[in-house]
Amino acid sequence: MAYKTVNPYTNELVATFPDLRADELQQAVAQAQATYTRWARTDFSERRAIVKKAARLLRENSDHYARLLTLEMGKLLRESQQEVTLSADILDYYADKAEEFLAPQPVPDEAGRGDHAMVISQPMGIILAIEPWNFPYYQLARVVGPQFMAGNVVMVKHASNVPQSAAAFAQLFDDAGAPQGLYTNLYATHAQLETLIDDPRIIGVALTGSEGAGARIAARAGQNLKKTTMELGGSDAFIVLSDADMEQAVKWAVWGRMNNGGQCCVASKRIIVMDDIADEFLRRFTEALGRLEPGDPMDEATGLPPMSSQAAADQLNEQVRIAVKHGAKAIRVGPPPPQRGAFVQTTILTDITPDNPVFHQELFGPVAMFFRVRDEDEAIRIANDSSFGLGGSVFTRDTDHGTEIARQIETGMVFVNHPTWTRADLPFGGIKRSGYGRELSSLGIQEFVNKKLIDVVPIDAAA
Picture 1 (cartoon, rainbow, N blue to C red):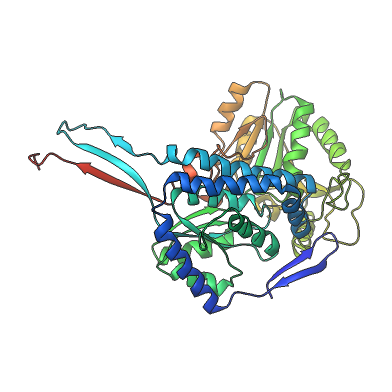
Picture 2 (cartoon, one colour):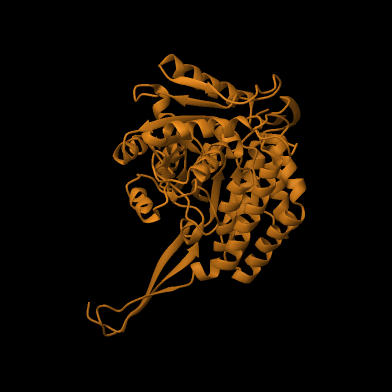
């Protein structure tokens, strides 16, 4: 069975869940399609009531939902609670803003013919969401919030190691009064995903995941002429200019690299520091990381949780080993982690040259790459020398100058004096091999709606 809960703190098997049967899959799609035909005709007030209630239930039962996240993927409990709150914020945001975002837009009559043209936004059908394990609720909220409010329905294939979190989010909408088929959780196989993408009732695919998964899913959807959005990997640059507030920059570097155990697509994975402050920054950064105590993610005193799985830990350790083999230096930081569980020692890699394989890889966990650079031009060059283009950040006391540096970084998002992060009202997405399309903000709700032109033309208008 592919879908199972394994506690990464102990590597103990907790529960297993059977794969979806072929007949169950067809029944689920038929139900989703039937629900869509009615849901698409509902008004915003009816949609809003259900989405708002789901947000309220998340907040009221925050501890229950948070503990499931920590159990299944090892996230620090306080970070799990923050994710629950963020997910509720996203649902509330779209419940409150969707009608405004999707209001008809008049088209100016530039030709002077007396036309009354407008563009309206209409739902399109069933969206298939394929989501990862690192933010099991947030990833779902940023799809279903806008899609439900737009009048679409959603079928979700979640990661196989968070099946209880996946089921809990589906139950959340049942408890909020959603009609059966509005939200469908699928313990689907890879072969069944292909069946879904081929099904004409599925009109679009939203994926967050790896480059490989994105390439496969996008190719399959392309064969079926279906729109996709792809939020893939990242290797965000964290640039520290000479005039940066050192204390704040170090604090944010630790948070940016270690949030979610370092398992975040927009984590600050490449720390790029001006040479004249590099020694002091590295010393402070190393000391700060060393204060993170490994342990039980349910314990408030823990600073370094396990990774999501032993396989993920093994992969990251292998990347470090290969990096060192090719000339990098590994600074092991802090106390040794427990022998039991999917732990990785906090590590800083230095002396990384462009011919080192790790230079172009994404490190998903508590391992940072550290680069010292001569000047800002070299910092920008290293930041852009990546196949990824998701986020990045620039630290400086001169925010106007920081903004100018940010304009030169080839990514979908750049923050000045803060690591790349997310809010309901900020568009999220990347370029290059980090994917395409945007989620969140007013842009996220526009991805899977039909922007239909209606033009009322005078009957005697010239051709």
